[in-house]
Structure formats: structure tokens, C-alpha cells
Image (cartoon, rainbow, N blue to C red; front, side, top):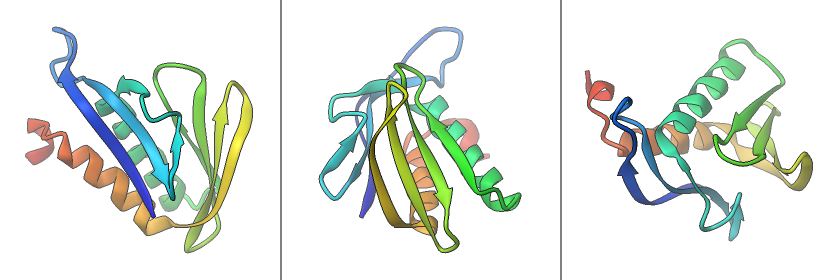
Length: 124
């Protein structure tokens, strides 16, 4: 089961009141990436992830990259039809590959995480 775990979220920055900062990471069967205590700008990266996954599906691309804002880490998602394989990359090296993740579940987890931030313009 895949999850996006978020904790200690706070608004950050007067210029962009909807930039929400806090702990955020993927968790899959006990594996945490980038780490359990990774902190980053949750709202922008979730927007990016949602857009990249949608683009991959709609344009029938083979891969997309889910970037984190802080640090040198990302996730390369490989479309396998109903499932995806995910390469978890830290400092330009694959740290782990997890295969057979349900594509619809991954998209749903990203969408639910973004919706949980309760950003007003998402409700329009």
C-alpha cells in the first residue's frame, strides 16, 4: 500500500500564502522516501506530482518524474499499464525500485494529499 505521509504542516511565506511547508514523504510497505523526517513545500510538490501523473496518463507517456523542491531527490514513475514501477532516486542514484504499484491508487493518493491541505482555491 502506498501513502503520502504529511505532518507538522504550516503556511510559509507572505508572498505565497498557500505554500504549505512540513514533513512529507512516500511510504510503501514500511519504506519511507526521502526519509521519515523529510521536510519540504508540500503544496507545490503535490501540484507538480498531480500535473506530471496526469500528463503521463493523458499523453500516454512511458515515464514521469516526481520532484521534491528541497534536496536532490525524485521519483521516476514508469507506466506499466494498470500498474507503475517507481525508482526512488537520491543524489542521482537509484536508492530503491518498487514495482507493481496500482496506478489509480498512486493518482488517488496524490489527489487526496493535495485535497487534505484545504487550500481555498481548490474548492472553487
